[in-house]
Image (cartoon, rainbow, N blue to C red; front, side, top):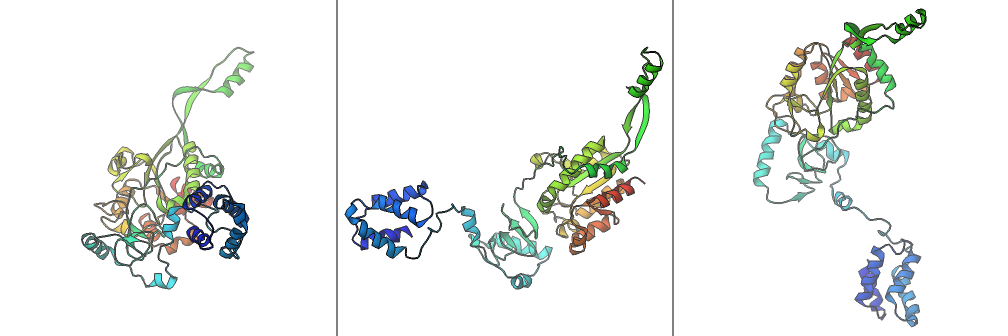
Length: 390
């Protein structure tokens, strides 16, 4: 726009030079004026006009070029480059999206192998090749009801059945207090205390009472230490669609850490497979085999899954179906294995229960759990704890 303005001034016989034009650009880059046309007028005149005798001619040329313009478009904010990139995304109407067909797992992977061999360059906005912003099943920032996302940026559709990318998740905080009080009360239903072992703890109330009755002569009384007998194995889904429920899960995690003395926790993503992890920052380097966890903790542990169970059905039913890596056995196999060891198990789902019928994967997980899926609400927690405490 300003190049044309510069040329317009020269066509009106104003003695403006390239150096003066660059001075104006530098002043705009430094935000010397705001986006109003009045501010720009005075800045441009100061930078471009060297002789006061040319003020009238400049005013006429300026008025001709910017007639009807009140603000300088684009100067009020720096537009990030990624925003401009997203403008190139192909827009699909609901009718266009409905026409796109799922290929099915075998066909999807077969065609993906062909694309890798045949494709020679970058593509954008198409429907076949690996690219961005289109309706192809392969790429990123576009839409397809069942595809493979390649690259770090998602369009937010959450329809990918496989993701080729290094994804980073953060650990759930264990010191969240806001909103945890009612959750603690619900979890308390599961706690069972037993007095056992040798006297290890000072019984302060009895000591004070006996000392007072003994005319002030100190009479110490001990009692067995209070033990929380319940043991809990907590498996937390992290990342992806669970990002929508981080606050609620942090409140649950914080409450569980406070209520259960014998609490062990691990993370997984979407469905249970052959490894878990304790620290999301090192989940690629410090993986813990699921079999090790199953062998380490006895069947007296109560097993609690926390996750929205929202995923592709391939992630549960097929080898290699994991969204992040090629698993040798389906998630269904690992679910059945762990449930065979821990008969007292429940699944807490932060997704609203009214949406469960719309997600096929939720129905599958629910059946695997023997219908022991409960909403992550106070009522759902109460029902889940009631089942586990039987």
